[in-house]
Length: 321
Length: 117
Image (cartoon, rainbow over the protein chains, first blue to last red):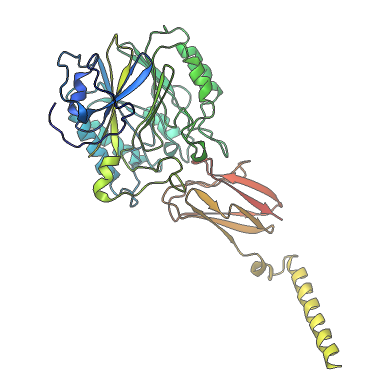
């Protein structure tokens, strides 16, 4: 790929050369973004703009899905007066992928004020992908009604406050809810009932089963001072310790971030609505205003690919620019 | 001689004021002027002031000046606002003395306290 569209490096930890082995052809579309591949438990990231040519024999990926997050439908302040427009741009991006995703994950804060018309609006916009969407709620989705509306709309097949698991092409997906019953001064919470369910859910799975966990608030302590963490996530991760490949996809912080701990890759997605400051870089984690022409470059989607036999899932962020 | 009279009349005035204030706490109309609504501003993911001290019977009003919605929820659930978008308000009258810690149920790291005397 010699075409250089927008040179935007989101993650470039290792400054390594390109390892073509196991490379996924569908990564070639993005002129922006970074490819993060975990091989043998070590995460390597490559800027896509540095790829001079790609191994055409590389598989297109057996399972491909997209994560979007934090659409905040109903938000209309200066940080982004048109969150419907930027969500539509995200959908356009998804529809333009050379390998269509099989389904979408939405990691919460679908709405801004839990209003019915906000949920309706998001559903309407996402319909044009023609794909199933699996949702977990954010704290903005369970206001005023203890999550009743979320369950009515998106809870079919789920348990408790909306947690669930399902399998696609041998990958086991687990959607967790960590925004209910938040306590004063606290962080996200999974709660006893959900943790018991999780323990039982994965008990009989082979340790070679790739696991993808998705939840709104990060399941690692990104920045507790701003509530960016989950109090009892260590217990959840203990139940997943036996698995060789665990990918955790979160939202809530409105920026991409990643961390690898043993066999677990943690990854947070950008918002499709507005960015938030990096940990500690502002007084508070509120909407961050950027010049209008830069807005779409700090919003984005996450594309995830799995190839059977490959140990890793490839997680690629790209912006809406 | 005049100075002693001055001091004496001042003392009477002060005494009268004290008596007036005293009667005020027993439900006279003067009470409305003695205990105005107290304001708490919500901005930048914090309650300001974080701790307020008010007299029993005071109505406290929270106003959200942040560009993100917040709520006001007592730790013991004795009061609970609906979600407040920018410029929306919530009021609660504290009739019993005590300490009332509260937080924002959307962003639980935001905490505040009302001390009622």
